[in-house]
Image (tube, rainbow, N blue to C red; front, side, top):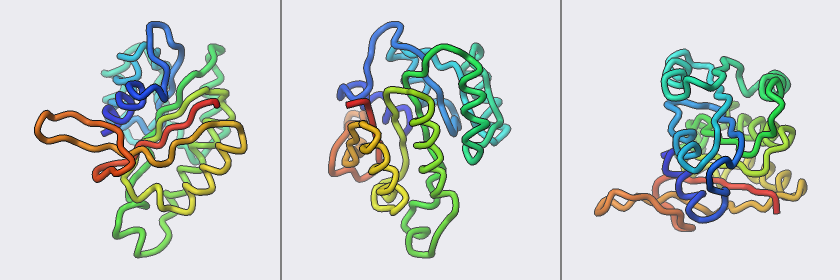
Length: 193
C-alpha cells in the first residue's frame, strides 16, 4: 500500500516528480516500498529507519546506497541527528507508522500508545525542513484524535494538508487511485503551501 500511496501522491501533484528531485527519508521502512515509488519519481532515498531487524535487512537490499538506522521514531532527537548527519536538504519524508492503533478493534478497545507515533512523525517532518510528507495508514487514522492534532500543527506551520485522500484499489485493472471515498487505506499528504 505504501508504494501505491506515494505513486498516487506524485501522480496527483502533491509530491513533485522529476529527475534529481532531492533527498527522501523513509520512517518505518518495512519492506521499503514507499521509497521505491519515491525513487522512481526522481528522489534519492538516503536514510531509512525501522526498529525491526527484518525490515532493516530488506532495506539494505532495496537501498544499498542508503544509511539504514535502527533508531526508533519515539526518539525524535536521535532520528533528527541521524538525518542531519548528511548535510543535503531533505525534500520528502515517507512514513508508514504502525496501523494497529487505527484499526476498528483498537479504536473501540481504548488507547494504543503507538498512535502517538503519528505525532512523532510530524515532529520529525517539521524539524527536518522537508517540503513534503506522505504518510500511509489504514482509513481509521483520519478519525483518530492524534491525527486531528497533527493536522492542526502542520497547518499552523504553513503546510497544505489533504486529510481526505484515500487509497482505492481497482481489482479489474489492478491499479490504485486517490479518492475522498477510500475503502482500503489512507494516504495523508502535506506540502509547503
